[in-house]
Image 1 (tube, helix red, strand yellow):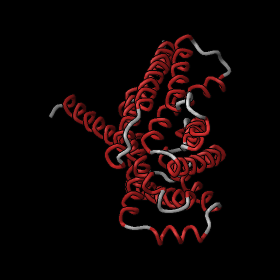
Image 2: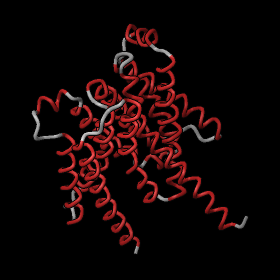
Image 3: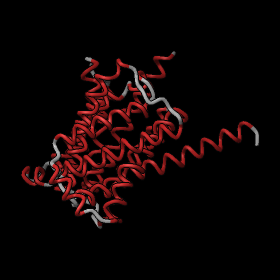
Image 4: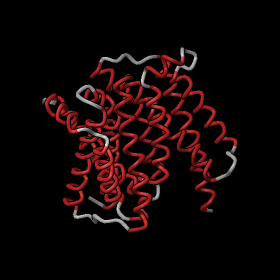
Length: 306
């Protein structure tokens, strides 16, 4: 096997791995919906965060990676941990009240759009024509996903308010994690972030609630917890970090477009949640908005390198 063939083979493996990782991210919404029915939100989220921490520690031990980060990264890490803790709470609380498919499409569609809007706000610059177009499409997509023409009370009661807050929280979180590589290995940064998250969530979890969760848990619970915490959060996310360095950020980020689709399909197959027309239409429009924003972003980066 020559060098070019070997490189192509390695790239194909990464592409297949990215496909599997994105589908795992999408299916985690259906899995989270199952977990949310076993106990209080704080208890379920606390266990998920703790298992993620242990899994990341095992990964770093296996690959013999560096476990520590630079001292300059401690404050951003603590801020990221607060955001991630709040996001996990909103994730499960939204699933208690709402549908997994709708939540998966809504959050994964709005995340990059809100993140881009916050980036523009912090950079203190006016959006370009294409950026304005992308953001406007994103706003319309969000309105369709939320069915704003319906009664506002039904929107609040459906769990969508938690999903919207989760999207905003994730966008703020991305501000603290975007430069995590400056402070050490991204996996090590994630390890300590989830470790802090575990401690923070435990502060809001009662011993009685934890005991009730363990009493209610069964084989279905533990399989879903294993998938949600270990397969999805630890392995799939870690693979995404590695694949990004191999495939390039632009190509790797394009795979995120698969997450809303797999979230809707997974909820349809495993939870029998029929996809609604506004979820499909809003999701597709949101993907279009992200495409417009990413396309412009790529052009800007190319121009800046010339």
